[in-house]
Image (cartoon, rainbow, N blue to C red; front, side, top):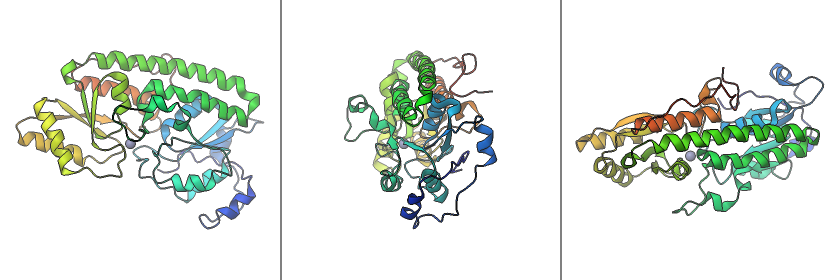
Length: 338
Ligand SMILES: [Zn+2]
């Protein structure tokens, strides 16, 4: 669950062992796994990259193509706000060429680990490479880290990713640039799909209620009012007052559907349904959304493109709009979806 496709690179920085000796037990140089050999082009070393969330792993694979091998620390259903790195994760970080994480406190429990090693190899908080102004929401006291929820914002990561890969492997600059451009085209299509779909929801029903505040950029980009039971981090518990406020709103506005999230327990959403029912309004679960983690690997939702297309379609249909399937296969997707 924690280490998907654990592709190990050769350990180069012997000195890093001494710094981490208290955290991990090192067992000598590891040999490359059979998995790694399968993914690696012949006669050429790939750039080994570690990412935290799946959405980053996916976009890095798209930009890097066959020249990267990516280890994703957080799998499907894993909550990045609460995730603590295990021994294998630390080893992967020590072994790789490059680490990408989101930053802006998304990986709340990993900050200390990344901080300790950041002077030893490139560890890049990708969200923090974007212009802060684009990340500011109206009522914000801190930057919201869930920027993948606005596809146009997420597209902004392509250039920094390509630049970092080029730094490690300048001979493949052209490939990274052209992969980046191709990915950008697909993301523009996805963004337009989101705009069209959400616009089909009757205006009075454009309210999205979910387990935690992961969808505020989604709301800003696609024109929905968005409310979460918990705040922008799941580290803080929802209070009874918040549940009551939302029940008031659901019953007053006759909201037809609210949404669970794949990486957050359902109990708060159940409280809203029960509370609304007690007031005589029946609200249903509109579906499960992928907020802070993608779906299972090998499924359409196991890619960024598929995850966002699923979210857009699920929200649109449950709130009374209409959306066709986003064409994941015809034009090629961020990953091949068979
Ligand atoms: Zn979150």
